[in-house]
Length: 240
Image (cartoon, rainbow, N blue to C red; front, side):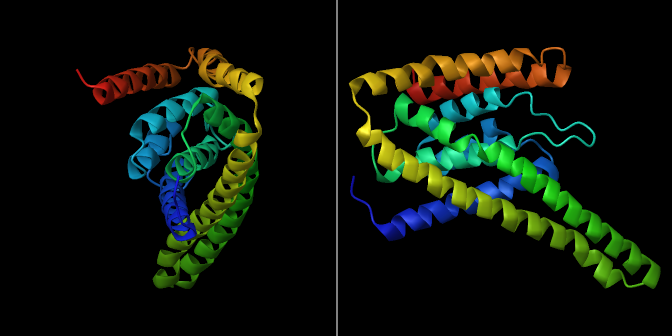
């Protein structure tokens, strides 16, 4: 598939910036659920002209991390950053290197999954830095300097955006390199094994994770909504 380094960098930068912006919704701002993998990955897929791939991959990743709920002070693995990395790597591979199949999807999930735990570490570091901003905000309020106070929230969001975008960029590059290098080396038996993993085992594992949350009403509604959204999306793409 013909491509240039400039086009690849352009598409990678676009996916990184959009992924980083949507990731702010998870903890930093908004919190209207656009950071969920089921929304984030299809948005990236739409940008790359691969909406069907984005829907399937987003639903799979959503199920795998369905139990990663932010409750109180808990810091679960960051499924949003993992989804952005996995989705971006697959979409870039499909746009610039070859056909996306279940083998590519499975490889991307396995290679990109550790980003969720790296993202958890990053969340903890960012929260510590935000505590420092809170102390600076208290000092600004006591000193009567509203302009200093007003720019601190923007500083916190900018810091989060830059840190998460950097992780998405690095994680996407590493995962995509793994796809480009590993996929041609796989023989027919290995490809068949990864097809089984991608088409059966990962969705089954995701459903098992989702079933652990059925006692939580919000998670049950999200599971049902995810299924219906993907179902109607695929039916719409397939046409009458």
